[in-house]
Each structure stands twice: as C-alpha cells, then as structure tokens.
Length: 64
Image (cartoon, one colour):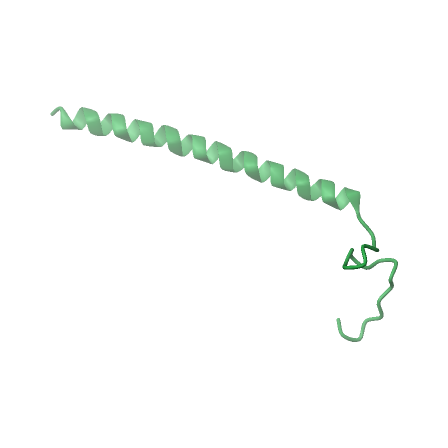
C-alpha cells in the first residue's frame, strides 16, 4: 500500500536477495501443487477409460 511503512526485515526477496523465506508456507504451497497434479492425473485416467469405452461401444454399434 502506498502509505504503509516498509520494514526491511519482512520484505519479500527482491533484487537485493535480502528478505524472508517462510519454509512452512512454501511446503503448504508445494503440497497443494502435488495434490492438484494428482487430481489432474486421476481425471485424465477417468477420461481415458471413458474414451476407450465409447470407442468400444461405437465399434459394437457399427456392427448392427
């Protein structure tokens, strides 16, 4: 914010390389990312099985 005083001990790491790093916050973000990747992979697997089922059904219907 424009009028807020800046405490140099709590600034994010910037161009100077000085600042703080919260390992707990990083760990939480990393866990969220890994969980999201897992959900995406499961969804991709479900959609892949659905596509295989649809192809099989289309093949059976084409025989009639």
